[in-house]
Image 1 (cartoon, rainbow, N blue to C red):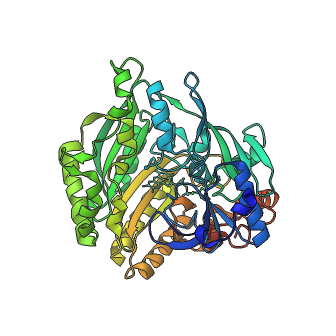
Image 2: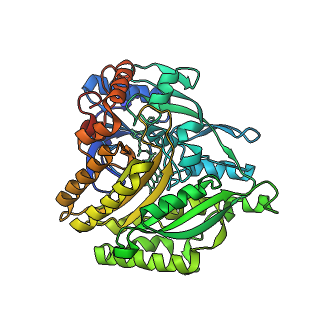
Image 3: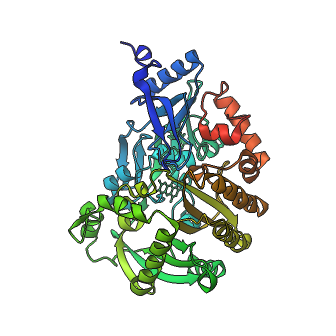
Length: 480
Ligand SMILES: Cc1cc2nc3c(=O)[nH]c(=O)nc-3n(C[C@H](O)[C@H](O)[C@H](O)COP(=O)(O)OP(=O)(O)OC[C@H]3O[C@@H](n4cnc5c(N)ncnc54)[C@H](O)[C@@H]3O)c2cc1C
């Protein structure tokens, strides 16, 4: 059987494909190729049947970025080999389906760590480049694209282009962050970060209100490698926007007396049980009864009190993996949001506007009684990628439960919050979006960037085969 025959739009390829936030489920024809030739065959199939293709890595985007209802989904997770690794220079080449977890497990014992990671390690490198992910070090290290040396991209026309800053530089800067609309990363080369210990020095302190957290982040910015704030959106009055802030630093050479031990994988991971008894996999279920405003208010309050007693003002040494991927050690925590799921709304606002906009976002949420269960605050710097989401300012990522009862109110709330962002010259992050209306999404990006991206898309994908539910929702007209 030839590959072209193997890829048919048959019932056995029809699958339920879900957004990570479980807020949207679609049925698509799903293909999981392992070679560039097989990818090309899926394109042949799409062209001959008049279908479109959405690319999917691990499906960790909260909304519809890798969904394509009733069309084709090209799942790249089986193309997950590490192709080359040089432990002297820290340069690694991977297939797009390799995950950040695959990466750190492979390199850490040689004294390297991925320079930029997301809050979960389960994302693929293809997906990470597709969205140009940022970490808690964005203010210093920039997005992952800043650490990409080169990639091969397979275009829907069948051409493969090798891209770096010097070769096909325009495509390099458009495809990274191009949400899978221009072509498929098939081979990615990245520079890893040298580390001299498996531990980070982590400090914690509390703040109240956005003016205070902004001032604290500015004070710590120059000397910190990572910074993140966890803001309690239930807090009101004098405690409004209570936050626990973590800053972290790499250890300098010689500070860790036994780096060979701390860099060992076994010393990075958290035990699968709590206090040796309760399996962490049960936590998602245990949290389910708290999936209500009063329940989450209680959890946020308990977290604030526990943090101010045991964490605030303290310094600890913490393994990289535990600091970076804490939520990965609570398997299926998102199931606490079942049956409706969750959405995240992450907006990026310039420095001088962020206090006002984010204060107002919480006030609006509280007024409507639709309060985010989790609020994560970060400092960012601008980058030179075409479809960038970063600004010189802050981002606030808000997790809201998504239910039959609140969905209309939530859409209204998102629009109100998004309007504030646009008016302040801010941006949105498509990896976290589920509900942005097209006009506000476009206003956040700006028509000039959209026009440049559309022109590049016309060259790379003249038949507009690469599309997704996200691209249809926000960019109908050029990529949709
Ligand atoms: C718990 C959690 C925490 C997170 N924390 C962060 C964070 O701290 N920072 C952050 O930036 N993001 C964060 N994210 C979002 C996540 O990093 C992004 O959504 C990322 O893109 C997911 O990668 P994926 O492999 O799952 O890709 P998918 O979600 O499957 O796809 C993402 C995009 O990449 C495209 N794509 C996938 N593979 C390829 C390819 N080979 N070639 C071209 N395009 C491709 C897709 O079309 C899609 O547009 C978090 C997500 C979760 C669930």
